[in-house]
Amino acid sequence: MPAELSERLAALFRWIDPGPGASHLVSDVSGWWRDPDVLTRLGPALVEPFRAARPTVVVSPAVTGFLLGPLAATALGVGFVPAHKPGDGRLPAGPLTWAQSPPDFRGRRVDLAVRDHALDRTDRVLVVDDWVATAAQVRAIYEICAARGAEPVGTATVVLDCAPELAVELRIRGLVTADALHA
Image 1 (cartoon, rainbow, N blue to C red):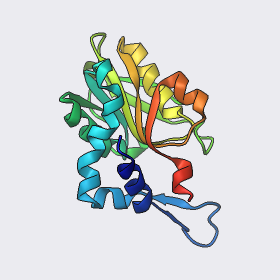
Image 2 (cartoon, helix red, strand yellow; image 1 turned 30 degrees about the vertical axis):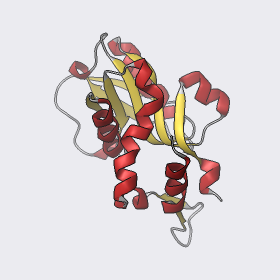
Image 3 (cartoon, rainbow, N blue to C red; image 1 turned 180 degrees about the horizontal axis):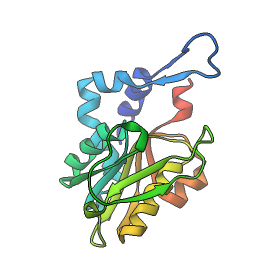
């Protein structure tokens, strides 16, 4: 992945103070979506480390994953499967396979669901998300894959913010590190 894309991602990123009473800054990635060059390059850059694994489908969690997942799927020429969260609107009709994540960076456990008919034992899954810190949602999606008989080939993320050993264990590759966003 070209270094200039990583640099551009960092340049377009901002931390925002949400105001009085806030305990932490909030990430603002809206610059990524507004920049046509970044938007064009994100999908191909995310999937490049996984092309040799021949993914057959991309799975991404709501909400930002619903932007990145289709970009990655298009770059691979494969389909996209959304992983839904119950609090993010209406769940799809039909049978769903559910998994609950381990605690995330806020201590929350996130429920994720994929339509049963969307994954099967012939699938090689590339998980795509915007930010991986604890890999809690990654683990939940890998659990859904296991329940459906699909094989996760790894995870592509824009921001890699997890421990190196976790990235190795779960085959997570990122375009920019969280440290680069704090500079």
